[in-house]
Image (cartoon, rainbow, N blue to C red; front, side, top):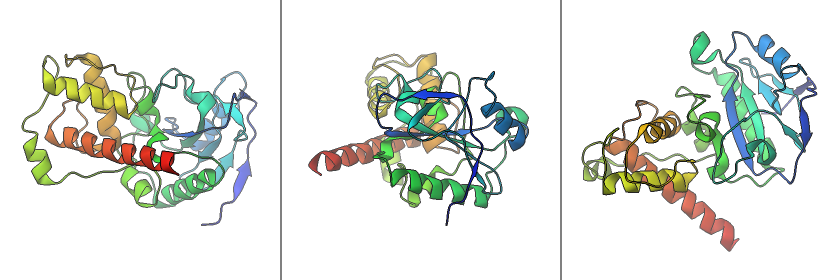
Length: 254
């Protein structure tokens, strides 16, 4: 789809330290798109993003991609702790969990897909670094949430998606939850850390592990967002990791 941008310059940005190599998707989490746009352009708010996508598919350009917008806040992904410096941020208009979370309209998602493709035509952004706000800050954020169609985005060529076979799910057996310990937890925590989450390797399924699992589920296991690592969650993690590893190897070879 042809992209038409509406300019809505925000003063809330500063200099980058290098080219962006990450894309972070958010929802606005406010009652209206108008209110969200006003806040993102308010110097007193000290928040911004590079783009805002309305429910009808309109795209507002707020901060030049070459500048560091203030959208991510405290968090980390794949060892990067200044995510604002490394990323481009897209705010997607949606009331969010606080104000009546709802499905994202087709026109809006088509615009997000087209915008993502446009951004990636200019910058080298791996699929494994197209993430949710909740991925980089599981303890603070839920957006864009379990209703965002990550599968559709991946089918359009942007981001990672994996659906495990039933045999693979069955092979992993039962579930892991808070209080569990042992090799299964070691593998789970190591896998989440390797994918990009800030959770450190360990052998105890603690509250931080549950929070991180919930963030993973919001992105990749959307019909179960409870922080319990059932067989499908764990099989999905293994598959997403394989895709991320293959992408990394391909990138090195190229």
